[in-house]
Amino acid sequence: MLRLQARFRASARTRVISTALPVSAESERLVRKNLPAPFAVRAIYLKHVRHLSYPTPLTSCAIIRGQAERFPVPKELYAMKVLFIGGTGIISAACTRLAIERGIDLYLLNRGSRETGVPGAHHLQADIKNQAETARALSGHTFDAVVNFIAFTPEDVERDIALFQNRTRQYLFISSASVYQKPSTHYLITESTPLANPLWKYSRDKIACEERLMRAYREEGFPFTTVRPSLTYGETIIPLAVGTWNRPWTIVDRMRRGGKVIIPGDGSSLWTITHNTDFAKGLVGLLGHQQAIGHAFHITSDEVLTWDQIYQAVADAAGAELRPVHIASDFLVACFPEMEGGLLGDKSVSVVFDNTKIKRFVPDFVATVPFAQGIRRSLAYLKSDPARQQVDEDSNRRWDAVIEAYEAGREQAVQRLRTA
Image (tube, rainbow, N blue to C red; front, side):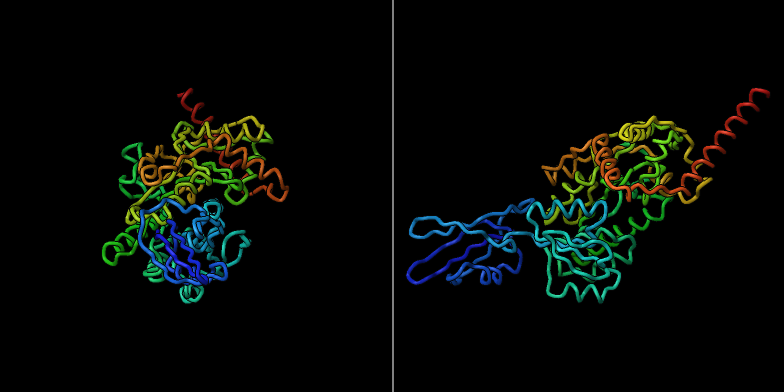
């Protein structure tokens, strides 16, 4: 953040503006361009002031012979200039809305394959996987912060280091809380919990990304910050351990029809689910935060629920009776090997996140959306449009088959042991 001081002269009258404004490197050019006529810049002075957690829209005061006149300061003069790579996903969309609400000069870089007309944001069209195309789209731009929501492999961050070295004051990498030690040796997770997950390649790739960024920070001064979300949802998602991500209405429809639903384990393991609007408070609070450079943060709710409670909250919101079938996670993985990472490497493990660190760096961060309330928002959104109520019949058939096999096997085991 910088202090902007400009002195203007018109005829025999002198006007002075002197106010603390967080501004970007283009401040002098913008002052000259945007000052209200007929004033001309006589001198511009920029000097550093204390870091602010986020910018606030301000007005400057022009002093003329002791009388104050007010006029708006152009947004570009005080706002942090931030780039979101992605910006339209479950997590990033909430961050986009909050960043704009807080007056950030926001740029969204994506391929344009989704609706990109976000009011209040600038759009840069490029495929981040195409480094040359992205470099052309970024030509002439520098940023106070860059957030990549869609970096998953070391190759992705290697490309970003090349693209954004000397182009941004801060690069935020969106990692995952699934990187933490599996199996856990302690239920309470802090940012210093070891990173090791042999059960999920997705997590191992994220760990490799974090390690590459730390090496770039140590050896090249690359200004990165790591952010680790856990299971985060919004209006478009029903976040269950066994469900469908692309057609979330499937599990709701199943409950409302009286169908049985699978809960891994005995339903008593602990889990944390975070609403995307709560996550956004933490991430936006870290933007431009100089003291966050080189640090990692997880950003989650403080609400801890069992999977039984989570499923019950969904059933209550759907107006349905919950008919749970508790099935061991390793049995589910034996039937559906593709579930190993997301289940044994993540959701079947009890975890409680200690959010002390993010609260210390972003004092106004607090998660305020309890799951029972957030899931009702999701149901209301899905109910509001029949096009959002698509059902994945293939998943229904698979769930029916594994429930039938599990219950038949259980009954056979009971009968065998009774006659033994």
